[in-house]
Length: 369
Image (tube, one colour):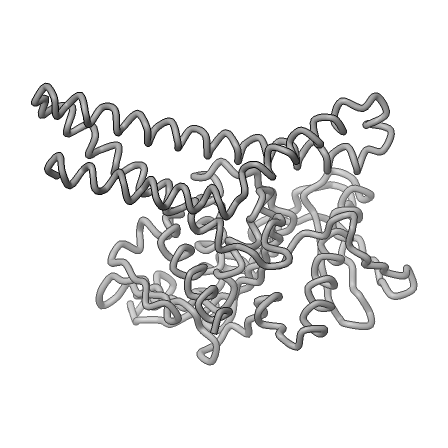
């Protein structure tokens, strides 16, 4: 870019960042930080463990958000100063540094702008996700495992804490289902646009005749339940089954019956957990998953929009939201937003930010209509 073009680009980024600062209300965030710091310093804070965790988690998030905005502002201002010096001295190398910084700033500010579009009731929450293999036999099970890795790699790229609660392995390869949680603010609002049926077209590695195979897997995303949610689950509405944890091929991974399966009798919802070492821990985690699914169902019924909150998907042709084509050409395309890429390898390695951003913008446009 020329020096004039760089100056115009910095000006546009400054306008966007000011808009983001206004929408996020930085002054309000600083007041909230001060209140949370007072709460966190209270001598009796840890008398209530759940509340203490809520306070410290929220404080950490607010501090991180403020710091992120402040760092962006400093970087933007520094880029402007560097541009002025480069112009005065005719320094081509410094102008190149400015252009590189502008590209990085644009990417970061665009990602932050998406955050301002997440204004739904539960968008701030952590996300509880379940992947299920759909039509397509062993290829669908393998595809479900590919999607699990994709979302876990996406979380790793962002340094989000995550935990796999339960995996049900298919007999030959892949997964029947997997449940995992992304422990990051706005994880639900971000990943909820990924909910639905995903379709894979490729030459099947499981077909000895090398034929092309179409398979499906579905992703369900629900918000994690918090203390303020009124979700009561009477004990007589739950059937509890315990069993031995298993790995790929049915091999046992625990010598005791520590895995827990909960069935909510009125709705038929079934959840399980096998990642903890004790039966009590697995039961507590499974109960949290069950409550999250019941919360999603409750809100969906109230609003008569089950697809909007629960992201339920049947895993078939009828409700697919994204296609991953590996043969006869290479392409991943979102069928709602039309966003696409010719690099499925990068997508399966967790590079899905473009799809998420397009999905959030698409959802916002549809909400505003």
